[in-house]
Image (cartoon, rainbow, N blue to C red; front, side):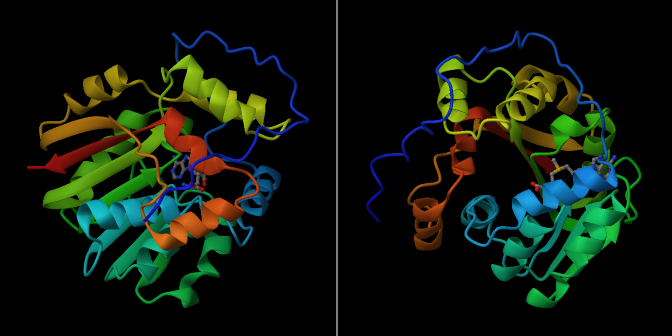
Length: 262
Ligand SMILES: C[S@@+](CC[C@H](N)C(=O)[O-])C[C@H]1O[C@@H](n2cnc3c(N)ncnc32)[C@H](O)[C@@H]1O
C-alpha cells in the first residue's frame, strides 16, 4: 500500500514561536480523574466520526499480537473508543475500565456496537478482576495522568494470564525537541498548553524501566517508539487523509512499553 507522502500543512493560525519547557522533571497534572465538566469536554473532543485516533492503536495491536479470540482489558478507557475498535477486530471479550462514572456511562452506550464489549467502573490501583484473567491489557494516553503509575502497572500484571502481554502507549517526556515541535505545529491553538502539560506529566523510558524492574512477575519488557501508522491498513489511511486534527502525529512523541507476564 503506497503511503501518503506529506502530512497536512501546519495550521496557519498558530504563532511561530513554541516555547518548549524544561522536561527533566515529571510535573503531575492537576487532577487524575476529571470533574464532570472536564469529562464531558473530553468526550466531545473524542467523539467526532472521522477520527483515526483509536483505530490506529487497535490495528497496530491486532497486527502485532492478533486480538482474535482474546480476552482483553483496556484500562482508563475514557469514552471507550479504543475498546470498541479492538472489539470490532474480533476479540472475544473486551472490558473497558475507568474510574470516572461520566466516562463509563458514556462508554456503555457503545456496548451495542460490538459483541463481547463491556464497560466497568473501577480504579486502576484496585481493579475488580481476579488474578490471571486477561490475555492482553492495554492503556493508551493515560498513564501520564496517574499519580501513582506503579500501582496501576502492578495491577495490569496481576490480572494478566501467565504469558499474557501488557501494552502501555503514552507520551515520552523526553521525545526529541524536533518531533515535539512538529507535533505542536499541527495542534490547535488552545490545546498546545494542555498537550505540553500532558507531556510534562509523562514518564521517560528510564522511569518505566525502573518501575518494570520492580515487578517480579514480569518475564521481559521492551520500550520502543510508536511506529508511523501510515500504511498499517486501508481504513487507517482513509481516516488519516480526512483527519481534521492530526492526532495521528502522536507517534512522533509517544512510546510503547510492552511487557510479558511470567
Ligand atoms: C486522558 S483520559 C484517556 C482516555 C482514553 N484512554 C483515551 O485515549 O481517550 C484518562 C482516563 O483515565 C481515567 N483515570 C484516571 N485516573 C484513574 C484511576 N485512578 N482509575 C481509573 N481510571 C482513571 C480518567 O477517568 C480518564 O477517563
